[in-house]
Image 1 (cartoon, rainbow, N blue to C red):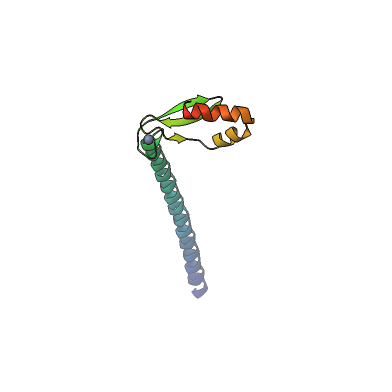
Image 2 (cartoon, rainbow, N blue to C red):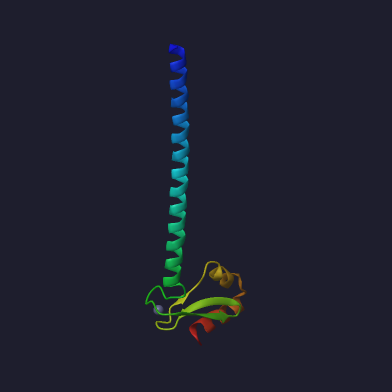
Length: 108
Ligand SMILES: [Zn+2]
């Protein structure tokens, strides 16, 4: 009789442990989903606020094609911005083409 009670207690303890573990795993999954959703939402909000806006004065940037290299120029302060890899394209040009690029960039 005593053994039956002990086995029953052990079974309940083990069952409770498994239920608590399943609840913990589910809670952590929901938390990860919440964090991912918030990060995606924040990323979209920042992009909506800043996309093609000058980082110095906040006015619109306009894309210009300068001999195959696309740069972004501010419509207000005339600042010039390169996306990742665009400056590399300028350095990869032959010397004469590079001079031409910088003349177009300077508007001369
Ligand atoms: Zn600007």
